[in-house]
Amino acid sequence: MTDNPIFAVAAKAEALRARGVDVITLAAGEPQAASSAVVVEAAVAAVRDPATHHYGTAQGDPALRALVADVVSGDTQLPWSAGDVQIALGAKHALFLAVQALIEAGDEVLVAAPGWPGHAEVVTAAGGIAVPVATDEEFRVSAEALDRCRTPRTRAVMLSSPGNPTGAVYPECRLRQIADWAERYGVWVISDDIYRAFDYTGTYRSVLQVAPQLFGRTVVVGGVSKEHAMTGWRVGWLAAPPEIIVSARLHVARTITHVPTVNQRAALAALGDTSTPVEAARDYRRRRALLVEALNGIDGIECPLPDGGMFAFPDVSELLRDCGWSSSADLATWLLDTAHLAVVPGEAFNAPGHIRVCFAVDDDTLITAVERLLTALRSAEHKSAVRQIEEAR
Image 1: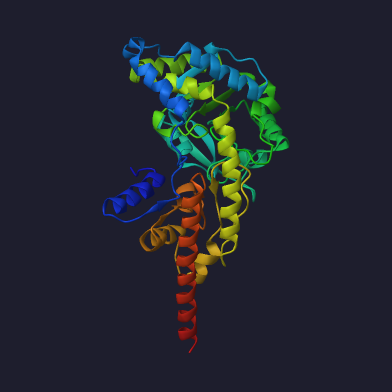
Image 2: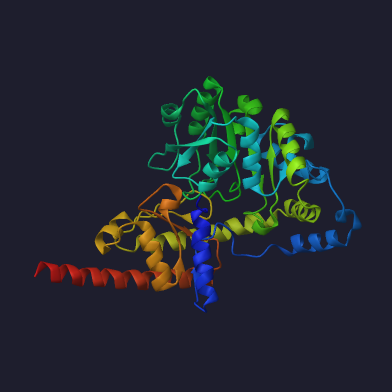
């Protein structure tokens, strides 16, 4: 069994740092920023509260669940209550809880390709089969593509908007078509909304806002990790119909008992802080433009402007061909070894010929990273041109 390839890149970067190498990481799926003072102070206060030193409820702190219900109600325009929410150890754990509640061994869940490998991983962990569904040129799955992959064992489809690594945001018409397809065949929808705060087009809509008829067959997953820079705190949630919540609560009670209470108090403070996600989205929008412009200025790279999320996802297939790399994994290795710049190869997302580059870093880091990238690739292009001249003689 292999580890998540994104973690493998991060581990190699850390190993170089341990040897004293100045590595810039644009490979992480997390903000570079630290958690806000609001979050930290709430956690400190929670540590000092003796009530947090003891067991909590398996379903999660009632106050946190109530606030999550308010957030999901706002996104979906549907009524959710604290009883409809299960607190989890991050959004990935919430996805697993949703899948294990929905499937039996051997059941299938449809996932987008390209897509975040964690979607397939949680399906595998729950005993299911993750079936990749090819996306269109804008990195979105369609009802037609889903139907081509549907079998009698298809139980659910995993949607993520904005997506990782592509940044694709699903328009209302596409969500409506997928919802009609899911309703027609009795397929559940698992909506991974972890990047909901980072929509740069103003077109983000929850699938349930567009298709409220799926209220009884949809699981909404979210968390504080991305929009509040709290990846290490591991607090996520799922909002779902009662039978899913009952299953998730039992699984939590039988395994981890509950999410640490201090972490939940920190998440409660984060959700009360509406300014941090807005400020992050504003900064990311600007850095997105800077990075995409730089990437499109390199011969052999074509980089669409992502609709949302924290990543650029350029097509580097022409660059690979011109400079002699056999894969984007080889290019990523070369960039890490030569330019000391970490990016994630497209193979990690079922997308050879691409790389994922994170722009959720500060301005100085991003500018230095772009300079390193340009210098390294110009050197590679020069060597390639010299080689071609020598071969032509």
